[in-house]
Image (cartoon, rainbow, N blue to C red; front, side):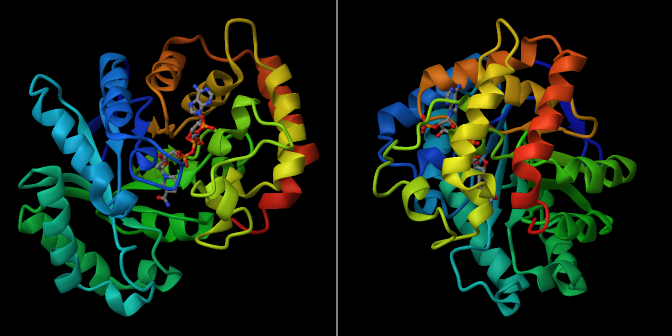
Length: 327
Ligand SMILES: NC(=O)c1ccc[n+]([C@@H]2O[C@H](COP(=O)([O-])OP(=O)(O)OC[C@H]3O[C@@H](n4cnc5c(N)ncnc54)[C@H](OP(=O)(O)O)[C@@H]3O)[C@@H](O)[C@H]2O)c1
């Protein structure tokens, strides 16, 4: 699969990576065997970038990746983890001593001396303006605990503040056909600065696959049941912040725009891959079939102009007003 460079760190990632929140928790039951099969399917399909976090299954996602990679020394996969959300979300917790402790735990879970890429995991807004925070991250690099660092953000404004920091290698942000504001507000600045963009929630939590109905029931321990209105964490992380019932209707329209030979999910991934400034896209997968189908989107030809125009029109008509004033 084609790889793209994080220009500030010189690291590379496959254009389609893998999100591994599903391998930890919050998506109903994904057992250890299924989790390993997802990693195997992604790696065999050419995926060389896994996104995880210390909080996914409270470390289970990181450990699952470590176990898998220990059996496959032939693979070269860039591992991006995240830190910061195992404690109360106050800026005072974002200090060097905590960073070291969080990093020690991730290094143990991942079975590595140095983490390839660590991202602050959607910290409070004030954290982005703190020189001490970024000095502390530089210290982690100097101590060879991490090779590079980035941030995972909720809003375009947070992304722009982070991009202005000289050593931020990557910004992870929600970007998909139902979340277009970063195209105008973030991607041009990231390109200019050489900051990599990791596009998350690319399928709007599965909505863009066009397979859910208004009466679809998700498991009780799936965030698509318990976080629809932001009850547990930012509402934007669930269905990309789109109201479920109107999202299902818009997703049906989106599915009808998929060109022949593309599934709706592949249409969404292909749309993201071809946006200038995107480094990698990280769909989550709950089965090996999903992981393989998602990776296959990297080889599909670019979407034709008329499809792009129709996706824009759908966004303007049905989605924009729901999301743009918030994220
Ligand atoms: N704050 C943060 O930093 C943050 C927040 C959210 C996510 N992330 C990262 O971003 C990754 C991706 O986001 P996400 O997992 O939340 O959302 P997503 O990738 O938009 O959606 C994942 C869901 O889409 C469905 N799906 C995946 N591949 C499919 C296919 N080929 N065909 C049909 N359906 C498919 C599955 O739903 P079913 O389960 O219904 O099959 C899957 O659970 C996460 O895994 C995580 O690594 C980071």
